[in-house]
Image 1 (spheres, rainbow over the protein chains, first blue to last red):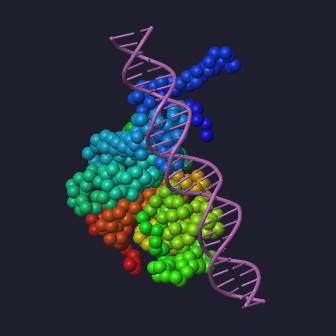
Image 2: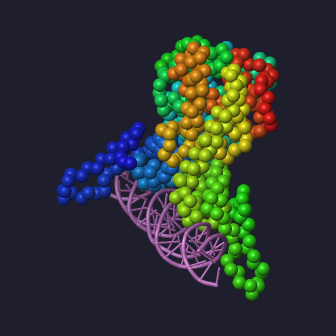
Image 3: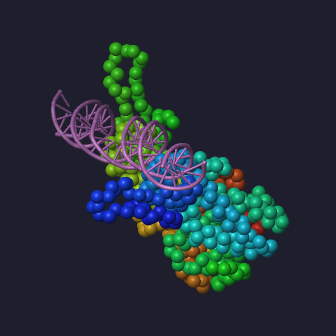
Length: 232
Length: 232
DNA sequence: TGCCATACTTACGTCGCCGTAGGTTACGGG
DNA sequence: CCCGTAACCTACGGCGACGTAAGTATGGCA
């Protein structure tokens, strides 16, 4: 439980203290950031801490300490813990959704699926902390409605895409939500598990997920391959 | 936020206070349970509260109050909040696993899948509170290992069954965990969502889940039917 | 009937954490 | 060089929650 070191930006605590000099200690001289900088830094730290200890498990003082700052600074910027949390969650939700929907370019539904799965895994890998937060329960009054979890909320955002496809294929669009939840849940839990074990490579995981979602257990391929080629 | 009324068992708080009588109030006469009874009652109440407010959001005093008892009673029985929580979680995990594995009687894999899905939905419906708890993150040091979530833990218990089937069918058993997580995640998130909207009936949800898991999006049936017939 | 174990209580000490009031330091522009 | 503003601090009040110490009712059993 050290408090030192900020992750990202510049917080060199220039504690220029030449041992026992007559020179007045003048309070360990701190970095003075601009408002926006500090704000971003606090968001960064908040995300990290919320990810590993949850909302209630994280104290404002801890956040402030890790930023090398005192509490009131946090209150200045976000008005409290909930304020900070709200911003973190909002950003992460946008980030994820943008990532996923942005990846959807294909026409063929199976490729669509591939792209979505891959985008989600990408997100999980890159913004692990964010994902961890989204997987948890939100204590703050939900913004959108009365959802049990944030991912469930995400899933409802995915419904539309599925809904269109369902209509085109002659399925009851009323069932889109159900299948959306199922698919998102599938990828989400697998992703969470994958973060722990890291065993198969990302591409392989994606391939198998698509394999399952597309062919079903009945028609599983032994060596599933992704159609589209992706960087990384 | 009333504190009155215990859910289950007997806690008639016979506060025989006839306005301003000369009759000594003799302290509101309370029910005196046997140790085991009280213990069960506390577990019941704890489960309910943990389900709706989470571990950290629930206070020992609240639990005690709802049981019509004072704090030390809880400490006597469980040594603290974590103790109680641990017992609740353990029981719920067993309950779920027993329910699911107990339902697996079929030989044909598809029927196996059906039974599992149905059993899980059964559990979700019957022991909603327990399910809600399992879906959350566990703050207590994990018993089994270092799992992100309790359901993920559940999923690893399911691996074996899948592993056997994989072996029999000539698939790489090393992939069983992945598919187990995927399947459990699928049902879990769908179940959670279903608790909120309650739209399609349980049997229908099960049918669609099996539809997806078995046939995949490629071969989806429009009107999926379950093979096995179940009570309720 | 009286005793004693068991079920339960009131009362307290303490700690962590939230949120705020009011003061202090640095930096940049006139 | 001076001064105002933006960034930041120390210090406190207060609440809620955990956990414990020590005492009180109760009911079965000798």
